Each structure stands twice: as structure tokens, then as C-alpha cells.
Image 1 (tube, rainbow, N blue to C red):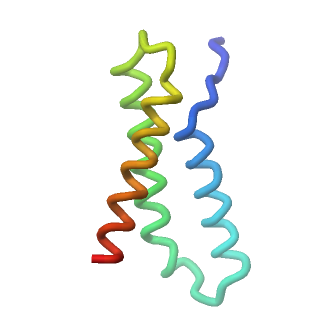
Image 2: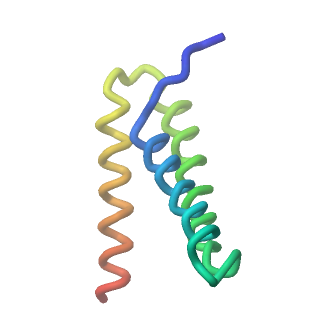
Image 3: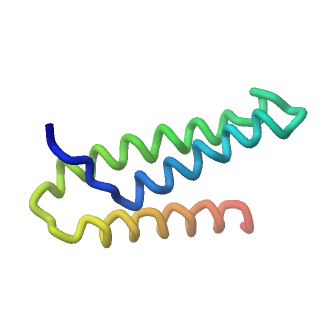
Length: 82
């Protein structure tokens, strides 16, 4: 069995999953408020698999995935501000 490589997208997905569970346990909204969290979680998982397949030879996958996360955060920030 291959060893699991931890990447920034894995960490972001784990933090997002924690946020989803926190929303469910501590918020009165219930499942209705977590739709966007689930969509973002799906994007993170798909992007992680894409990076693993397309950048298989890249030794510094951390840099590529970290740049991807920063770009997504900036796009979301620009959409919310603008």
C-alpha cells in the first residue's frame, strides 16, 4: 500500500469538514446552511486528485496546491467585496 501524502488540499479539506461538523452541531440552521461548504469540499477533493494525476512528477506539489488555494481564496474574496 502506498503511503498517504499530506498536501495543502488535504489539510484544507479536513479543516472544511471540521467546519461542516461544527455547523451541524452548534448552529440552529442544520443542514440547510452547509450546502456551500459541501460544494467547496467537493471542489477541494476533485482538485487534489487532479493535481496528483497531472503533476505526478512534480516534487513540490505543496507549492502548486498552496498557490491554488490562495487563488481560490482571492477569487472568493473579490466576488464577496465586488
